[in-house]
Image (cartoon, rainbow, N blue to C red):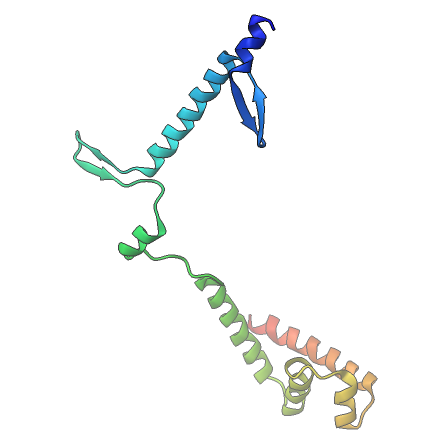
Length: 152
C-alpha cells in the first residue's frame, strides 16, 4: 500500500449512508465547511444584545411555543380577508342582478343553478321540453350579463 492510500484509509466521509475514503486534506476542508454551516445556523437561531446601541436583536428563527407565549398571531388557514370580501361583494352583485328578474325567471335560475336540477327535470316540472328550458336559460344568462354590465 502506498503512502497516499494509507492516508486515505484513515479518513471517510459518509455520503448516502456509505463510507467513502478520502484524503486528509479533503476531510479537513469538508469538516471546516460543515463547522461553518453549524456556526451560521447557530447565528440565525440565537438572540443578541448589542452593547454599543443597547438594543436587543431577537433571533431570526424562533420556536412556535415561544411565539405563542408572546401572544404572536399567525395567519389563519384558508382564505384571506381580502378573498372573503371579494367573494361577498360578488355574491351581493349576483343577488342584485337576480332581483331585477321576474319571479318566473328567478325560479328557473333557482332550480337550475342553486338546486342543481337538470334541464330535463325542470322541463318536466314546467311541462315544457328540455330544449325550451335550455333556450330560456341561455336568454336569462344574456339578460343577467346585460344587467351586470349596466350596473357594474
